[in-house]
Length: 262
Image (cartoon, rainbow, N blue to C red; front, side, top):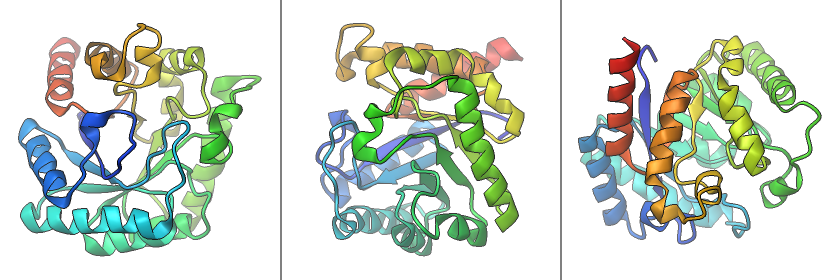
């Protein structure tokens, strides 16, 4: 993590908020993966459960049928690929690791039993995201007394538990768009360096989200420019992983950031 990394998003879902991120077949997912790697992606984030506000619940079996065959196919085609499994379900993550995933991306930060133990025993990097309440009701939980302090306390509790279990490689995701109002998202970005106190890498996922397109009165399809602007700001504030739909543009953003920062 001495230099920023790019995590490319591949959604094996029919309803993720940005249509171009969806892969309807294994073949399409593999093609997207290869393209992202060619464009400079360091990590491929594979998910079979859309967590956009208002999304429908997906059963364990459906999520498994979407994600696991894609991971197998990518590893077969590109064995050196670093794959992140984007799931909060412990047993699905366990199987994904068996099939070749090497990063755990858990948006619930251990809400499901056994996830922290799996993260520790696997010795793999574990991404924990800040969110309040169940996924289906997360946007009902945006009332904070002190946003940064409450998020810090949330991470502190989980980092402590994980360390006690022997987990070392943790990545913190403040959860842009999850249990946050539009203004709260920008407050977090403005104060992102606040979370460097943990001395763990910070992941930022603002790509094409409503905090951009709603503020600019546009659509997710037209939010690439705004994404690049906010990604650059995130890098300046300490982000070490950019989770994005558009790998080429994120790689260019990092290149320009490094030119200025060096």
